[in-house]
Image 1 (tube, rainbow, N blue to C red):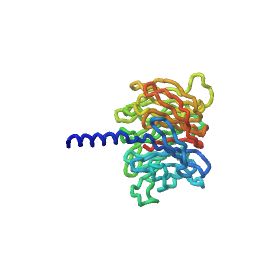
Image 2 (image 1 turned 90 degrees about the vertical axis):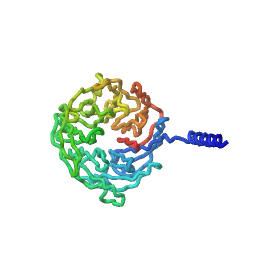
Image 3 (image 1 turned 120 degrees about the vertical axis):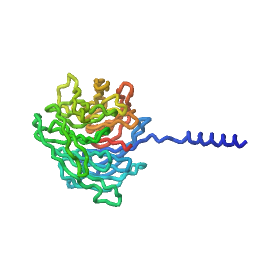
Image 4 (image 1 turned 30 degrees about the vertical axis):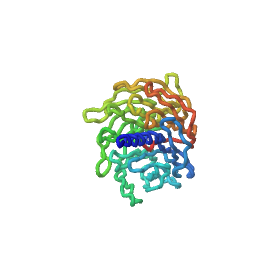
Length: 373
């Protein structure tokens, strides 16, 4: 009798657990380029099963929050942008992950010109910034004491880049365009569009320390990069010649051995174009890159240490300065700056190909998508 009662209770518990709804919606933040202080960082929710995206809402009013970084483990969002007087700043926000709303936590005035990228160090104790205008990178210490406001972000150091390239309109001097850490090592890479090179750093107690550099093709203009999930390959998006260059690690563990360069333009294209963003799929089987002018997402299959062209997707895409693959790997979302919306594409994980879905998220001049995962 007791055994039967126990089994019935256990069965009831199992049934009640199995009927609990699973939350498949992921919070995401959108950076914009604007000159209106009534706008700024937007947020919405994306359903990783249905592909439905909610209409964005304002998270914080800030001028030109052109790049974001998330720290979901500690509950923070970071953004580079401007005050009303056009002073460049980096801000931290405390995130309510249920509602998506944020509260300003701290702010630091930036000395460099044209901040365009922000990323966390591997320990999440430092914030790293790239400055396009002044051609430099910097590191900020993050004070984890939540009672401290003004000193949460304090500058550790700045490193000036040097060099130039043959493209006179864009490469008269250095233009640091992105900075990020290799998930599989302690090396930190910064792409410099003006100098045609990647700088390699490590994070030390007093900030970034120069380790090496990787020289690119003259006139290529490296902009963004991504690391393959298996740690074997670095893919660099070259803005000026609209190409992707891949690298393997050398004996020191630095991505310095060039593998191949592929174009992001069809043979029939003859107009103006410049590449924008690049990401590996979560399973590492495909590589995606965006282009402006020839507005597209280029799809490449990763075959061992080679990448092979699959196709260009152009439907619903206009000036795709940034895009992101959702945490499930099932969808790819494109920030179409000149369409004032984010479009959603179902991703075939077997072929890598994309199918556009009907729903879009309306937001003025979106240029950065970050999932709060």
